[in-house]
Amino acid sequence: MDHQKVFSTNIFIEDNFLQPQRLPGMQEEIERLYGLREYDGTWQTGPNLEKNEPFKWFAKDIGKAAFNIMDKLNYKADQLEITDMWGTVLKENETHPPHTHSNNFLSGVFYLDADDTMPGIIFQDPRPAADVFVPRKKTKTNENSNLLSYASKNNRLIIFPSWLLHWVPINKSKRDRISISFNIQVKGQVGEHHEYQSGQF
Ligand SMILES: [Fe+2]
Image (cartoon, rainbow, N blue to C red; front, side, top):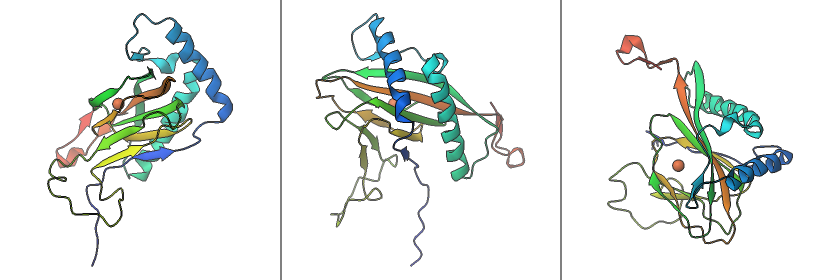
């Protein structure tokens, strides 16, 4: 029987994304900004981290990865813009509740300081009815799961559709979990004029 997998949800993962010698400078910059913090809850940098020195090159690498993803998905993109980039320090007992990233096409996270004592990221099946009835599983696979968890580990990049609901469970580690998040929007023409579904961004 012809098995067609349709309406796919695409999550991209790359381990060892950066040369390891680039990580300490980035981490130091987050720690410097963290030292200047004005509040003590779950702390995030401002939304323009890509303008800070160690993150300028990182943003370029993210841009290249995003173009590769567009290519792989057979989408045209005149230009991709990193609209937001920020760092997060998730301390012990802190969590990120379920959310999406509005007004962008791709979003992602990069783990700058994380280990297997810390929570990963959980994605929820975007098909609202898909877990109404779930048969027993011979083997748990990405395709028969309604929740997927990806471990947070140093130098791992994860890029996903901005609309995909995700969250981070409680950090039970004594150590701070440091991650960099970003949003990417397609600029220029989207859609096709002759299909009456185009737009300019
Ligand atoms: Fe997020």
